[in-house]
Length: 302
Image 1 (cartoon, helix red, strand yellow):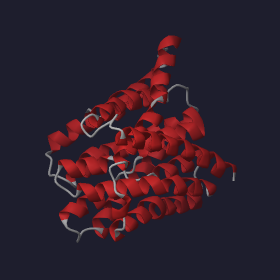
Image 2: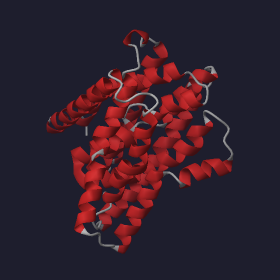
Image 3: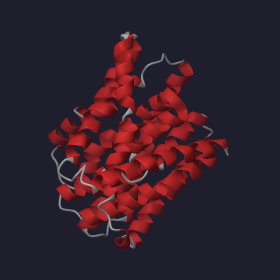
Image 4: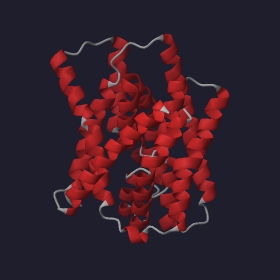
């Protein structure tokens, strides 16, 4: 119950950030024209700082084994989700199929998940989360993009290699392994910048939600995607990890990141590649709002 209350408190904070973003969009402080700049600020500056600073402490041999296990679990979950999406939605028209398959594969583990893990489990939890998202980032910019367009191999690899999150992981890991010291002033500054990831990312999601009409949310595909993303996939992962008996923190990080809402990039890519932007936005809205309820419930079983 303690875990539930803590997670419910964190979700309450996220809700406040969403409301701030909602208001900012309604009063036109942040508009569809200016939002990409704020999004890039989060992706290229705030989030990499948070990831880099999660590689701060020297790991024990047991924690190193846990990182290898996390990578393996993340890869397996991602492949399972990719195949599941391909099978479930193979007969849908392109404008919905691409969105449903991408949403099954990619959750909002970076924007919403990582800050939440940090607030719930501290720097070690954030470090584990940074490791867990590596396969997801790779698949996001390779297999994920291919669901919307047939990008060539060179473009896919460039997207992966130049992904700021991946670069932050590489630099952070190098710093940890080589035990490179960082001046206290720089360390404090980087941590402060990284800590802004959670409010800023959720505010941006709030601006997207402000553009959705609640009356248009009654859609069976949206309902099924919400059930799949927030309950079925994390439920299966939780059951398997409990049976296997993995480390509690590894289980918590894996299940909570798996149970995150559909990534906001779903709507962005839908608009860019001619899929159903309105449908993608509905899925982002519905899964984001309902995750405020489902995530604390998931935490009860951790």
